[in-house]
Image (cartoon, rainbow, N blue to C red):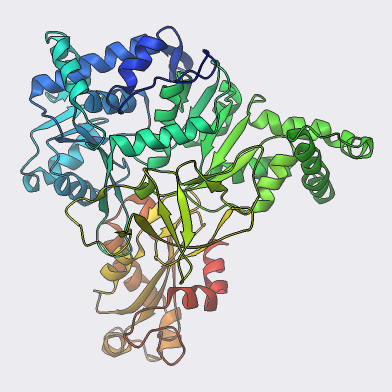
Length: 592
């Protein structure tokens, strides 16, 4: 533990004893800010400790055993955190499920992890589990956060049950947890097939928390984090853990994504973790107040001033004079972030360096990091003192990174996960001699900064940071007799779209039956009846996916993909990069 109260941490041994220690050490500090009836309410660490203790004892009363799995199916909110820490202190393992997941996807995560309980946000989420419950033989309990008197067990019921239990039972459970025990199973999209459950231990996440505290992202006791990221994602999870470890507060968004920016301005965070989409929106807001010349001056002149001041070097008066007329504009931009922001971090998807340079010039450090679920969220980070825009920073303390002969990024450290649950032979994410094969391509410069240059894997990461596995939709659509090929597109884009080709042999007879005289591929691609036919197939495939994964628009190509034109491999697999490049204009048109 660091000396003095300014940088004091819990000094927890595992994640199980993290919250109990925080509740003791930081008892009177605000742990949580959340909106109730439009007003921000505070919850102290001592109060959070009491809530978590009661829920944890309630879980023990239900018969939840050590190392059993409990799913949480809810949006980011204080109750997610209460449930998360309750499961963990009781010695069980949390398995998050995205609240946007379809029932079949919920079934896969709960079933593959052998979950014995699912904590659901409300009756709507519980209905998804009820729909597939017959396929979940290990599931014993469904618990509602927001109960509606439907007879289901609620979080409040658990607290009531917990009050009658001996607290020594919980302390014994917490003390019994070891660093090598599983802390959480996070299901992450693979390149093929259903999501794989990354088994992450208490030791994995305790090591990453130590790395984060080394970076001093929190400076004082009144620091505040604004959190809207899904806690089902590893990025938000690490932020939550690091915040509790330092005894600072989290302000949870009110649940409406349209209110994120107004809420940021209201709560005035000092630390803001986000995916690129929010920074892009903030950038767009700023652009409405500035000319292109002013933007360029802020990036160049403002950026130089920030660089010099950060390293305690003298700023030439000439630079200050050039920037002086733009200071009110820079102050406006700082105000969009609440005016108190010391650091923001962007992750989960790439972001344009120009945006980061602009914010830096305004005095708003938005820094990139890199990692994956398999590295317990993080592997590299940028700092205010040491960063290069366009790179994802340097390795965290205790992490080694090297580039394989084929350009793949390999990572070694105490943060590397234990493996995939029930999937030891998974091809992506294999660990050999301690080195995790990330599936990402990259380079390391002479100063040790890592740049990610591409992906060996085909996963699409949307502008909102959601990982999509295109194979799920593509393979489903290709089961249609009318479809030959399908390529999903959407990397760094707001939503997925698709390029579809027709099966000429099947479409000929269908066209004749429907009175279409010109059955050439080019004519069929434009025909309204054909479009309606394919739309129905797209709707069918979309129905099996979560909203965020559904293809919103598509284009029908006027010819099929082929090996001769370089779009298919000799084994007739689609060369995704070739298709993305060759049909870039068609994809762009789908977003216009």
